[in-house]
Image (cartoon, rainbow over all chains, first blue to last red; front, side, top):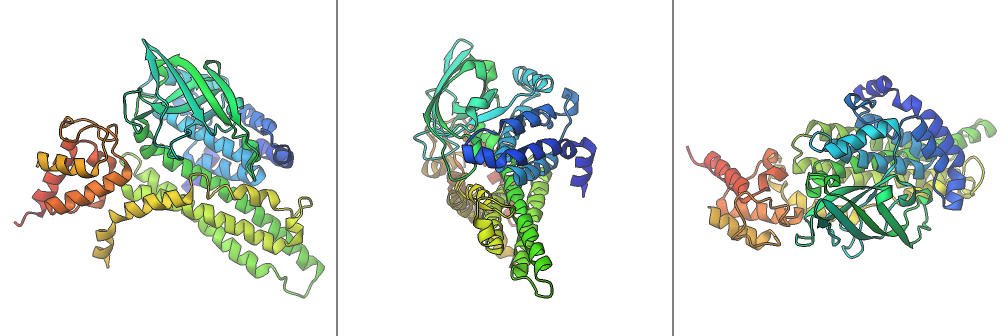
Length: 389
Length: 83
């Protein structure tokens, strides 16, 4: 319940109501035309929600991860692409806030965000590393205090609309592929050339085109903490928690349509128990456990934040796999309940967009890849289990 | 113990630089130690030194350097010694 109180204190969720309404209004058009949800993102900017997590001492609202989750979930029910853009932006913001104390350049950028909202995107994937976030082929090239970078990025979500891009790269050309840093590059310092087009089953508004990124900047723009530590300490957990909230939002919206459908059946055929009611109840309980698990893992991670154990990382991985799978199952149930009315692309019970969007969940960092890592990490735990037996 | 840790690190760590010559305090993650290699290394350390890492010790900090591993193993050995 502490989560609800914090939301009420910052008023962040209340302020999100207008962007949520605008996102909902434009969701079908964004999806149909494969376009960036400009209106909704502008509304998020206008309400100061891009910088909502900036701490009060820097002039922000100090929104917590719980606040961000609540907004991501609500947006997810309106327009999944807008919600995912919000989540991805906040993940970059968390990385920026983490290095605020040690790096003056990044601290200045945080202050800038308060006066003038900036949208952050990330370029963490690269061609040739087999989808492994933790390896880079491209390397920073130093010339005095200047840096330059050329990166072949198969995906930079909303890259053309971002005001800054957070890119991973090797520390320099002599280091291991895994010795990565994260560098914050301003739009004016980047040249992007589109190399592939995002025309996908769902999440169409994220405009996750492929680019060849060429950038020049200063050495001080490199986040001091190694990327391996950023990923392990916070980025993976925050990503999976916020993505999970988005997926939970999609499932909640789909279930709400199914609920309306069953309610309409009751009105029209009074006296008969509606066919979908049992399935609706099953989907509801599944969704309920999705929500509960997000809260549980967030609390577990926050409690261990200063020194996250591998056990916490296991919980975060398990969350991503289960929420992505169960949210899809909930949307699928909603489709079964609404039948042809859900299958149609128009009308109040249409679920095609929800189903297509939620299909991205298991693939965004493939569940099979996460399970392979989890399987290895479980080896570390085997004696603790047998001891408990 | 230091030499033995380095031998295990060479066999399981998957480092990009030599495990025998890397400095005691060098960051092993920067040198290429990845999570799956870390699991292998931990299991090998447990077997070689007849110790068990506790849940609280299973953090990235424990395996960050040769010196950190040495500290952790020494501590565990001390704890598991018969009184």
